[in-house]
Image 1 (tube, rainbow, N blue to C red):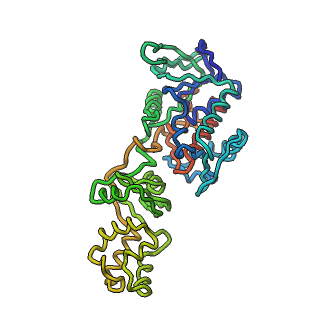
Image 2: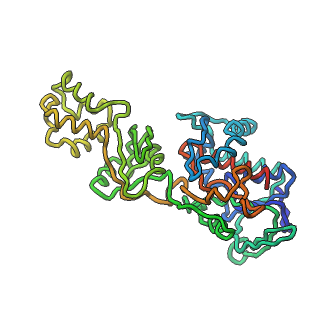
Image 3: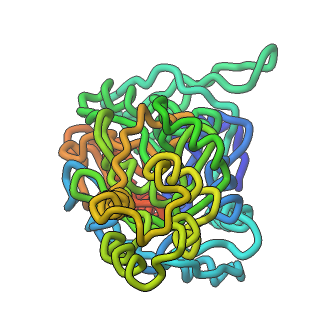
Length: 411
């Protein structure tokens, strides 16, 4: 990347050196635009580096609009069609990055998320993008002349802190959202949107674990670290994936997915034996394996520690009773609980651990074809700051690539 520190006027200034910001930067620079990326932290791409357990689930083979949540479900279509998962995969392959496919079409780096970040930085370097870190945005002023946006920036720390003024023709907001503040999550993008008259929808933590404060909390604590396949449902949505018990409650892919559709006070319904009608299965066992204890029979399908906890919850009076001697009504009730375990989380873990922020800048005020504000020429929004949220599985990164690329074609 170039380091023309004395320059103050740019065609494009991008706020945020995350996935969407870097993608937008080299896309615009390839068009001959002079591009500067400003990053507030001391490290670029923190969220990229920690994603996917350090392996970066960078996209998905099966990207479709149905994988995204927004008040306007059509908004994402144009960008996703313009820059597809296949386009990003091609760039990954051109850089010689090894990757693997996991279940549900998820693509991960074979070695390290660092490979994806290095690729983006290399593309920026080849395109002549300038990048500055430790930059805090102060005022953003608007001028009607050649350089419509003037930014007051403070750069550095302590006694080395300095103030600079920068001007640009196009300003791209790629600041991310509220999730995981320790990795740079902030409300800056929303504040800028508000300054320029764009609406912001309700925001809440998404792809986030649940906590419990009732009698289930000690159960979760005792089972912490245990994972099991479930089907979880809430508000008309269902996901079949793994659930992980934690010392606070429940996490794992199934729980993170359903958290996007859960609201405080809502109840979850969990099917502990996906693909099995537990009532019928237990009735069949009563006829064929009547001398067995229910606990031992359930060990065929669920971990022993988990079954022991369920026994305490659902059939303590029958723990030493052969299944043939358990009354049909009681056995049916246990089967119903296995089919539809009703749980009410006390809360989610919030933005501290949320992978994404649901909601954001209202897409009604932004062009789906260019990512530009409809009422403020030269002002663009990309990535998580917008009211577009993907499911778990690489979809949020694909939205970053697609929206960043789209803005880069026009900024």
